[in-house]
Image (spheres, one colour):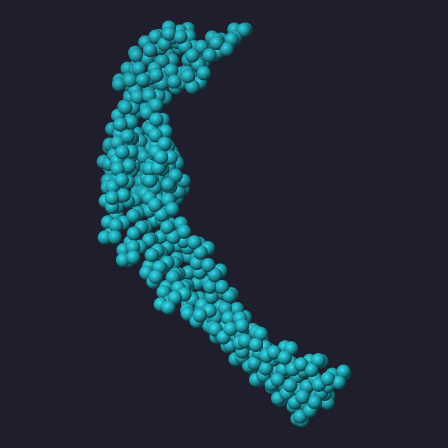
Length: 532
């Protein structure tokens, strides 16, 4: 061991301090010393061990201190301090030349603390705290690879350091479950995605009472939800848009009027139209009550349609789905139709999955179940009962954004609902679809002709009305009404086609016109009777 100086080939001092010889007689830095660059600038001052920086020391670059602290085998290792532009940048633990362990970061060119907490491999990872430039706490929580990630709390930059957000982060953004605060008072909680509150959530009054529960977009009510008074009374369930419940604007009123016109344009069904009009008026009035801070009556929107086939049940159900959308009852109002085959599987456990798939497609709209009584053939029908149990669960889970309409013959529907208490308790509004009268059946036929570019003269009309008037509508079990007329129309068109098949020169008038001869051909083939 000796104290000695070493020089670069250009004569500049390279090292001064303690040296020792190795077994080959070469000088090794060993002990306290200073290392310089070729221009004479100090690079390192501190302890060496066999040529490597080890122990306490300080590193410099162009005369500025860059690091002072502990070294191991030429790497920063242990406690130390990093400097930038003459200011302390980091103070804490190092491992293998990187910040690792507990440490503190400072704002650039400032003495103010920016972060203190855990580091791994040079990056913030684990528990830590961030500070505003004025020294107030900004964030307390978890970090992952430099970013806020995991659970944390964000604070307002004011003297009270009021809480702004408490919840989960991902990649430095609010992401996951969290709570928003204003002036330290909780105002909202729910799901966040990329800093924006969206999905299921709850909004609060300043008193802490729940104000709204449901879908949220950008920290305001948007989508399906429930609205409460400050004393906890539910006054509205339905659709919200940008923080406001869906209101009947002139544009929405126009859509409702259009759908009402479409329904009222249907042949017959006077009682059905009156029932739907009453339903529309009821829903509108509940919305007006909410504007006055009054409770909206908790109505069940599920419906039972009873009547024979072909009486317009499916058509009216589609219209109701769209009306429910514009009235704020449903989010989309689309229509999904199914029956037993669409809900019941042939294996234990598969039915529930099948029902879930159908319900998923129908969520936000109307699920129309035709001949619903076929779901359970008898008390031993385990598969059918599984379907009903799954539907009941869906009606409970999605009670604010799914409407189910069950349909079928009146007597069988009554028996079905009586045998299933769970279903019966959820259906309290019945709409009966009567058989069409004879004159209504002819009107349907006339509309089919008009829609499909067919025409007829007065003689045809009188003969057609005469034949239709002889149909014993009430005596025919399960008379198919509109379907009967459509089938009859198709058969008369076929008779016309047979009549014209061998005519060589046809005019536009010929191919458009139905004649009494077509009716007589149909009578000879007993098509009026066989169509029932």
